[in-house]
Length: 284
Image (cartoon, rainbow, N blue to C red; front, top):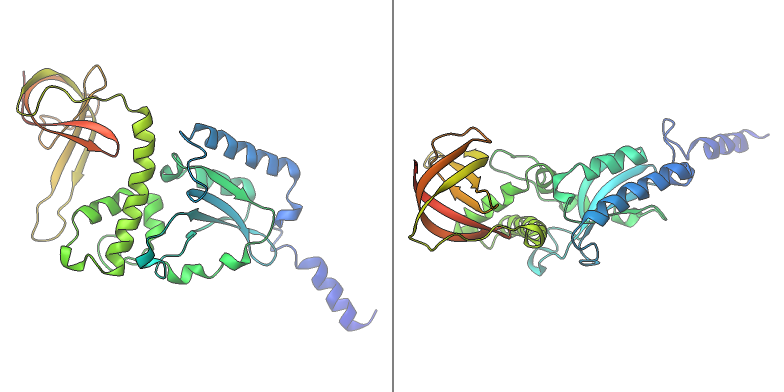
C-alpha cells in the first residue's frame, strides 16, 4: 500500500471519533431510545406541549463528526435586535455523550414549562458560529458572562434588570436584549402558572386581614448600587392556597405558621399567580 493511501486509510478509520467519543450515527439505539423516552416524559408534563413550533428548546448534534451535543432555544426575537441576538439562541455545549446531555438540559429550571426536542437526524453545521453575536454582561454581578449562561442559572435576574432599568438606556441593544430574555422567562412561567395556580385575591384593597399564614419563600435582595438599599421579600400562603407577599415579617424561617393581622395594600398578579400584597403585619 502506498504511503498516501495508508495515511488516508488511517484518517478514515480514526476521524469519526474524538478520544473514543461516539458520533451520533454510532450511538447505540438503546441509548437513543432512552433519550427520546426521557424527553417524552418531560414534554408530556408540559402544560401545552404544542404551544408553538417556534417556541422550544432543542438539543442538537453538531460538529463535523457529530460528536457534540449543544443546547438551543427557538424563540421569536424582536426585530430591533435580530442582528444582536440570533434565532435560535445558542445556550452552550452540554456534553459529548448523549444521555448526560439530556440529563443536563432537563435539570435546568427554565425548561420545565417548555418542550425539549432532540435533533439527531443530521448535522446542523449552519448553526455553528452564531455564538459570535451572543451578548455578554459588561456590568453587575454577572459581568463577563453571556446572557444565555446567566438565563440558565438565574433567569429572574433579567426580570429584575428589566423592572429597574434606567429609561435613558431603554433603546440600547443591551436593554432590549435584557427585556427579550425577561419576556421569555415571563411567558414560560406565566403560561404554566395560569394553568395550575389556584390562588385567589382575598378581600378588598384597604381591608384588614386576620388569619394564619405559612411562610414558604424568603429572599433577601441586596442593594442595586451604592445609592440604594436592599430589602426582604416574604411569600406566604393560607390554608386555601391563596398567596400573600410582604416586605416585613416577624421571621424568615421557612415553614413557620403564624396568626397575623395585616392590611391588604394591593392585589397584583406575578407571573400568572394572584398575590395579596399586605403591610403592617403583626402577630395576632
